Structure formats: C-alpha cells, structure tokens
Image (cartoon, rainbow, N blue to C red; front, side, top):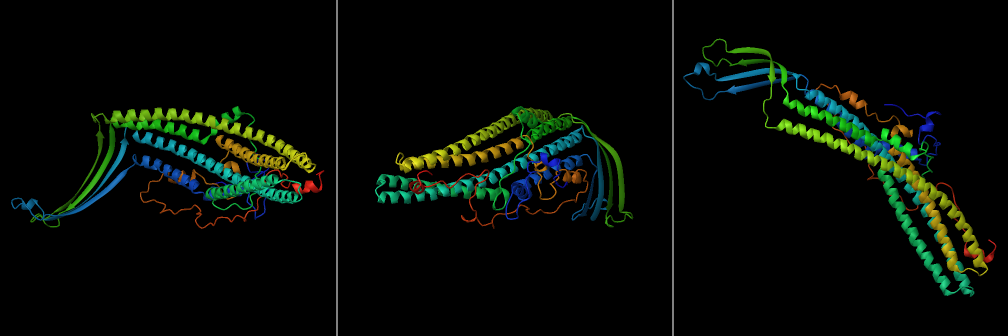
Length: 503
C-alpha cells in the first residue's frame, strides 16, 4: 500500500493535480473518480479476479512439495473359513502414514510455476486496464452530465425567449403590424423548442443514471473539470508510449510468455518421474487370532520410486501440439492487440484534435450568430426582416452553442481516452484523495509461499456500494448550468427590438 499525496513537483504529472479544493456541497472530477475507485463493482471484481490468479502460483508449486497422508480402518469379518481360522481374525484395526516427495517430474512443476507467475503479471496488467476503462467511463459519465445540464439550460432559455417572442408577435398582430402567419410561425417554433427541451431533460436523466451506475452516487453540483496535462505533442509519441505501457498489450505479452511454459509442462508427461517415498503401518487383530499371543505389529519402509512412460496412446504428443498451438495463438493475438492499441491511440488523438478544431469553429460560430441575431432583430424592427428570419437566427445560435458544449465534452473525453490508451490514466496517475491505493502485489506476496492446507480468508461479502436505495434526482434538483466558458444565454427578444430598434 502507498498513500497518495500531491507535491509541487509531482502534481505536474498528475491528471487531476491542479484541481483546487472545492466546497463540500460540490463534486469534483477527482471526487467522482475516488468514489468509483473505491466502490465500483466492476473494479472490485477485477481485484478479486487478480487474487484468484495469485493463487495459481502456490497451487502449481504444491505439486512439487512433500505430500503426507494417513489412513485407518476397522474390519469385522462376519464369515471366516474354518480351515484357516487361526489365520483369519474376527476383527482388526489398521493405521498407516505415507509420505511422497517428488524429486524429478520432467520439469512439469518448474514450468507450471513459471507459467503461473507470468499469468500473475498478466493479471496485474489486466487490472490496470480495468482501472483505465473504469476511469474513462467515469470521466465520460461526469462530462455527459455537465454537457446535458448545459444543453438543458440552453434549451430552457430558448423556450423563455421564444415564449416572449410569441407574446410580442401576438401583440403586434393585434395592432396589425404582423400577420397570422407570423404568429403561427412563432407558435410552431415555440412548440418545437419545448419538445427539444423535453428531449434534453430526458437525456440529462439518462446521463445522471449512468453517472450513478458508474460512480455509485448521484451527481451533485458538478464542477468544471481541470485541464488534462501530459497530452502528447505528436501522434507518434503517443503510439510509442502506448506500445510500451498500454496494459492490454502488456497483458497479452505476459500471456504469450506463459503459454511457452505450458509447452514445457506438456512435454514433461513423456519424461520419467522420480519420487522419494516413506511409509509406516500398524495393525491390531484385537485378540481375534485365537491362540496367537502377539496379534499386532508395525512396519516401516523408505525407498525411491521411478516411473518411465513407454507408451501413453499418443496423449502426450497431442497435448504438446495443443500447447504449441496456444503459443501460436498468443503470438497472433499479441499482434492483434498491438494493432488495436495503435488504432485506438491514433483515433483518440484525431478525435481530440478534431474536437479542438470544432471548439474553435463553434466559438466563432457562436460569436457570429450572436452578431447575426442582433442584426436580424434590428432589421426586423425597421421592417426589412420578418419574424421567421429572427426565429431562424435564434435557432442557429442555439445550435452553435449546443455544438460548442458538445465539442468541449468530446474533446475532454477523447483526451482522457488517449491518456488511457497510453497507460497514463490509472489510479497511480490521478492523485486520488480516497486513502491508500489498492496494492496488487500485497496479496501475491502473502500467498505465494503458502504451505498450510487449512489457510483461507473466510467467506467474502460484497463491498461495492449498492444503488437500490438511491432515489432518482427530481427534475428541479439540479439547476442547469453552463460549464466551461460562459456564453450569453439571454438574447434580446423581438419585443425589445420593437421598443428600441438600435439594440
């Protein structure tokens, strides 16, 4: 176990190291990741899976250790031969102890232990991969909630604006300044905006529930995330780092090494086996031999046993070929995972860069649409633009703002996914505040040399937090807010342009 602390030097390498302390009522991204790390059932199951793999080492080593067994029995001879009654006791008890120490087993135990150790290393890499995936899911869930809250806020303001527009249109219709068509267009656009608002609210509910599933608690006043330091300058650097540190690639390479030792285990079936044996027996006929004064005794023996397989029906050869085929499969899977990692890194890198470009374009579009809406309103006020032009301009501004917050979410998630593919988004990289990290080596060190047959840890109980008792958040529980850079969500209405056309 090692405690997590942030220092001035180390914080630059931590993804969340620059996150400031937040009020108790707000949740930060670090809070969410810490909560998920400590209570996510998928994460806890992955740790239990690694502990299972840890036990394969002492299991394999046990086949090369001393084995001791005891036996005992009681026999009652209910029918005896009368001719040999003096040699047929009526009853007897017996007890014996036997010991067997393998001396040579063709390398089966040695290779089995080595294969198990390689698979432990692969299991640790799999745990790293599970951490990266869980953290990526948590970041995506966190950003989805922020994005959808922003979209709800934008659509809510749009409904307010279009409602004001409709009232202004009706007022102008009453004085003969607009036609029924203008009013109908305003009503239609307001109805469409309300439906979009309802859809946005439904999507926010879905994102909240997904957050609850991944993190284990409802989102509460989520703060904007900190920047992602450590992103590579070029895609080649990202690929180079990923090929060295990606946990999925490390795991498959270790599995490939383990499969090579499996070939040695299979070949051992064709080699001789030698064991040192010792035994002792005691028998007592319980005075049932009739006339024989001493009717009990003990024996003891020591020796060496050797077994040389001569013919086994072709089984060993088949198992060797099978193990060699597994090596071939692992080699090809290594290349497949390598390809997948390269594609994943390049895709995440491209997505992040593309999202950055979309952010810049969307910011320009928002600014341009704000100016365009202001101009269209002014022109509407002097009669050179109609109501539909204003409604279209408002919709275009809303679309640009929604695209902006969506691109900001996509950029952050793609950047984190890139770090995860590079092997840089694990618990040790994130500076979590939830206490010491889980140590995947501690359990292995505890059990690797275990020789006690009666050692166990007791029947486990579930440790993950349950969500059955967590009530869904009511629709008014979270005030919609804009993340990232605030943008104007209160454009002037048509009624304003009527009273003050210069606006």
